[in-house]
Image (tube, rainbow, N blue to C red; front, side, top):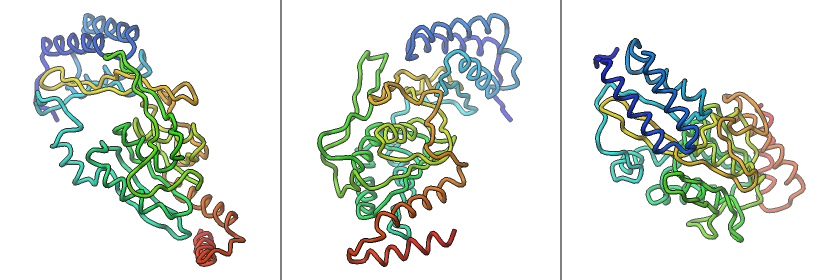
Length: 329
């Protein structure tokens, strides 16, 4: 139920402004021009004046632009409440306070039977705020023999944090080139590399890792999974992800409409491409709800084979844990 009345003049001004923003900011200028022309042509034909409410207008325009751009990150958004004139800043103190209450996206960190680490990350927040939490979480997992990283509900976030977490899972030296991001507005390439030193303890570069994905895994969550998969550092288990690769920001159009407009594209140095539109393709495809059990059982079997003849102190106890955990299934 909406109460704000969308008069034709209001819609006309909104669409015209959105068309201008696309020309100014969208990452691919030629596609931006095609989308802008399409919007204005549809507007001239009276396409948007008879929609029931702002949500329908936003959804209709988003779907039309997707047909032109194949960019699932591009979105027109309607808000019944007036939109603030203060731009959203993910590095602001207010966002910091909000994410602190969400533990900066770190939902769970634990040791499972069989000395398997389990990490659930639902967003990648900026390291200047979330770095300490990340260091504690990764240090806790350092002595586990294998790791499951659950990104099934991860909607994205900061590439600085994806690079930081990846650094705990890779060799310290030499640094590894993770990906590049080209920003159209600045005409600059931003490179992301693993860090040679991290706070706390590293999990290491040789122990097995499984990353869980769903069709909802998006943006930075996909970036993290894609980079590790390209480096052959992790096996991806679950569903094909959403395919939102192009980075950008939110632009306020008026009091009730705003748009997320991608202004950058990603290039992975290993694949020379990205997951845009396609998503991350799992190494082991399974339904989202079955992904954890599948990865856990595969990892337990792998660890049992690897350490079956080990005489290291405590290893037989851990092997017994593994056998019991396998038998439960």
